[in-house]
Length: 235
Image (cartoon, rainbow, N blue to C red; front, side, top):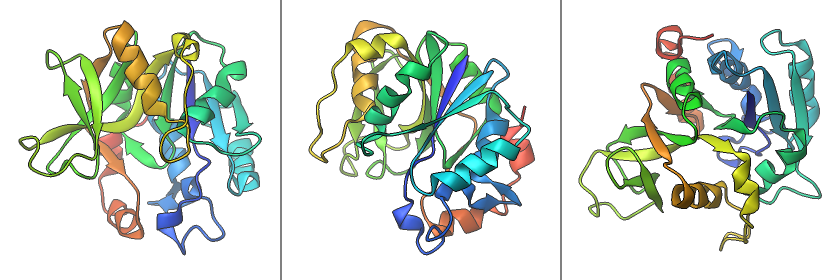
């Protein structure tokens, strides 16, 4: 199975740490975040597509020397990055499997949870949070099937805690039947693919046992003290 890792962002909120280092190569407990991503992939994954852009030569050098998954492809968004949906479109010619995982390259995930996600025909990894306004809240029909995502709702709209989008998905190639349109941000959004699949299939929500997004220098600092070997349980 293929896995796409989105690792091309500039990491603006991580400045000045990302001035000379791409965000996926910032280190957590001595390992680049991207290395943790590779280690957390389930064993079903045998080919990785890494989407690169900012300081891509550093990511390329890392992938060349890492021993975790040797079968990989680097993909750059051309002619320019136009959002996460566009990143998936750029990967289409390089996909070998009909179904594939997609995950953020700057978050930390549980291997077991990603494995459960990979076992579904299609789905999304969810996590419980005590705030809603920072996240995409997962709206369900029966507690397990996704209906839609409510992006960053006002606090108080939903009782807490809420299940939110972790940025990890199981897609299949049917998404490419759905034409994306530019969002109000001027980007092609990966969540439009999620919404499309949710209308044509039982798009399952898999609760994650561990998810740690790294969005700020403070998040990175706190990650240095997590028991990651236990929380991630690497492959």
